[in-house]
Image 1 (cartoon, rainbow, N blue to C red):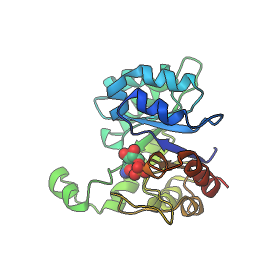
Image 2 (cartoon, rainbow, N blue to C red):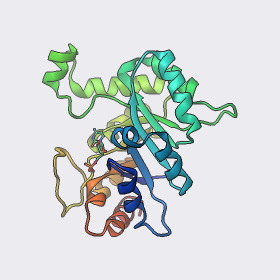
Image 3 (cartoon, rainbow, N blue to C red):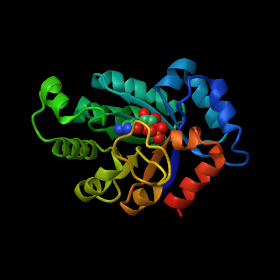
Length: 232
Ligand code: C5P
């Protein structure tokens, strides 16, 4: 599987995302479309970006009863996205249903990855609000194992967890890691960060990079720097 840099296109309108993508003359970066843009513009934004030749990670984090997730995944699969995701907390049965829904009549399907515990959830809120008493690293690894058992391709995780996920689930189990910053860049609101070069060294398969590229004075140069450091 190819290592790649995925740009988090966290914009709230089609106009803004196209103004951004227009800067990449001749290049077609892999892009992540999240809830904000998808809910603002609907599925048409996916079709339009796909038509421009980009690979798309549709980050909608599905979590519902298995039947609903299965049918929704079938709709997303027809949008011809390359990667999408769900919450592992929905159970192995929900994840299996998702794979069924996502699989096209010809047997192909987009990559499917799981969110384990959101990085915004800490040990305290997990224990008090979710009543999960195990330690966070164990919970994350358990959810990753459940995702593998259900037949998913990988997980979204902190770059710091990527190595452990590979140890537990195998090196072909994909790790998609946000929280990437240049050594000389702003950390912003991210807490635990890694440079693209470090993410490569610890074995991340895909890095998801937002503001270090989208807010850069020269986004194309920032993207190229990411690719040079991460893909080499
Ligand atoms: O701008 P920045 O590089 O921080 O963007 C990172 C992207 O990855 C955002 O779209 C953010 O929502 C997403 N993400 C994250 N941490 C997670 C899961 C997703 O930063 N644990």
